[in-house]
Image 1 (cartoon, rainbow, N blue to C red):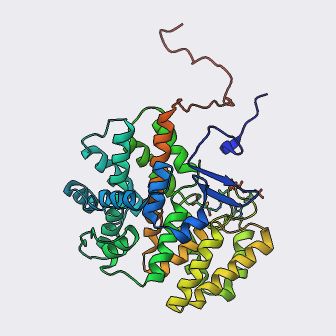
Image 2: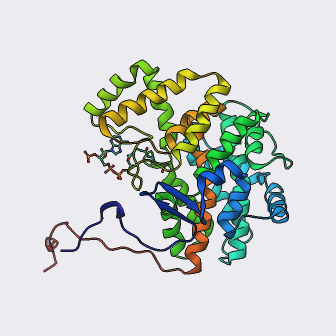
Image 3: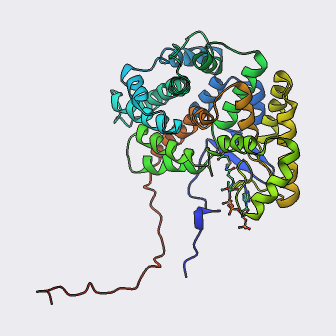
Amino acid sequence: MTEIHKGLAGVVVDTTAISSVDPDSNSLLYRGYPVDQLAERCLFEEVAYLLWHGELPNADELAAFQGRGRSQRTLPEPVVEAVLALPTTCHPMDVVRTAVSVIGAHHPRADDPSPEANLAKSVQLLAQLPAVVAIDQRRRRGQEPIPARDDLPFAQNIFWMTFGEVPDAVVVKAFEVSLILYAEHSFNASTFTARVIASTLSDLHSAVTGAVGALKGPLHGGANEAVMATFAEIGSASRAASWLDEEMAAKRKVMGFGHRVYKHGDSRVPTMRRWLEQLVAHYDRQDLLNLYVALEDAMTARTGILPNLDYPTGPAYHLMGFDTPTFTPLFAAARVVGWTAHVMEQLASNSLIRPLSRYDGPARRDVPARDGTA
Ligand code: CMC
C-alpha cells in the first residue's frame, strides 16, 4: 500500500537555492551565509537584497535598492481606506491579508509574470507592509496614522510609523535581528502555500495573500503572539512549573516550543535570545526573563522539547512596545521577502504542485432510485 506522509513530514518536494536548514548541524544559511552572521553584521535591507538577488549588495547596489524601496513607503489611498474600513474586532493578520490583496488589485502589472515585474511587486510589498502594520496598530489605539519617512532604514521606519519615535540603537538592532531571522526559512507552511499558488501560474499577490493566511495560524507564525498570551496567563516565574503541569495534564500544546524540522533546537533561537537579554537589561525587566527561563526549564525538563524562534521574539516585541496582536504581522512584514523569493524561484522552473491522496471514504455505492428513475 502507498506510504502516507502525513503533513508531508520528511518529504523533499523540490530544490531551492534560497536557504538551507540543517537540523543536524543546527544551521540555517541564506544563499550560503550563516543567518547568525547576517543578523549580527547586516541591515535587514541587505539581507532582503541577498535573498532576492543571490548576493549581498555592494555600497552602490545597496543605496539604489534602499532608494527604490524607500520611495514607495507611502500606502496608496485605496489601501489606507481598505485598512480603515475593516472592523477593529478582526485580527491584524486579516488586515495584512486584505491589504496585500488590495495592493495587488491596484498594481498596474499585477498579472505580469516576468521576473522583472515580480521583483518590482516584491519591492513594493516589502516597502508597504510596514505601513499597513503600523496604521492598524495605531487605529486600534485610536491614533492617527504617521507618514513614513524615506530617510530612515527599514527597521527604524517601522518604529517611526508605529510610535512616532525611533528608540535607542540597542532596541533597533534587536528588532532588525528579529526581522532578519524571520525573513526566510525554506519550505515552511506559508512559503509552501505561496509556491503552491504560484505553481498554478496565478499572480504574485495571490501567492502572498495565501501565505499570510497560512502564517496566521498558531502552529506557524501565530505562535509569537500566543507566547505572550501564555506569559500573561502565567504571570510570574514562580507559577511556570505548575502552569505547565496543568497544560501537560490537559494535553495542550505550549506555544513557542517544538519544530517540524529542528529536533535538537531551532538554529535561530540563540541569536534572538542574546538580543532579548539586551532588551531585558535596557528596559530593566529581569522579571520577564525569569519567566522565560522558568518556562523553558520546566518544558525541557518534562518533555525535552526546545523553544523555537517565536519564543524569544514574543517577549522581545512586547518589550519594544508592540501590541501582542501586531507580532505576527511584523513576522509577515519580514517573511514577505522569503515568500516572494520562492514565488520567483518556483516560476523559474515551474511544475504544478499537485500531490495525491489515498481515498479512505465509503466504497462505491449507488444513489437510491427516485420516483421515475430506474
Ligand atoms: N507543546 C507540547 N507538546 C508538543 C509541542 C508543544 N509545543 N510540540 C510538539 N509536542 C509533542 C506533540 O504533542 C507530540 O506528542 P505525542 O507524540 O505524544 O502525540 C510530539 O511532540 C510530536 O509533535 P507533532 O505536533 O506531531 O510534531 P510536529 O513536527 O508536527 O510539530 C509543531 C511541529 C511546530 C506543529 C509543534 O511543535 C507545535 O505545535 N508547536 C507549538 C506551536 C509553535 O510554537 N509553532 C511555531 C513553529 S516554529 C516558527 C514558526 O513557524 O513560526
